[in-house]
Amino acid sequence: MHSYYFLLCVLAAWRITHLLQAEDGPFDLVFLLRKKAGAGFFGNLLDCFYCLSIWVALPFAIWLGISWQERLLLWPAISGAAILLERITSREIINH
Image (cartoon, rainbow, N blue to C red; front, side, top):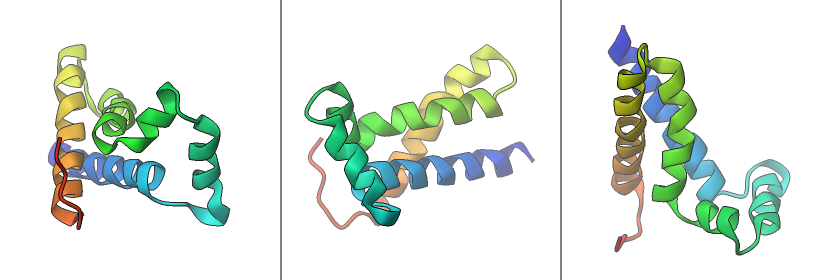
């Protein structure tokens, strides 16, 4: 059952990260959010899938993990799996 929830967390983290980083969202709300974020820390964060996935994965890791050690391991695991999904589904060549 734990792997089922891990998979759900990975898919949700990928979807939310992709929405915030690459899509305009309903009624252009996400586009306006990125525009309002500007060129500072949050604007740069919203421009980078890799960076953003780390922060999107955090609440999923906190929710899914039982101990703080497990949460610390789940955090990069969820982010990394979301990044792998992005690389598999992306049409762009990423040079990071």
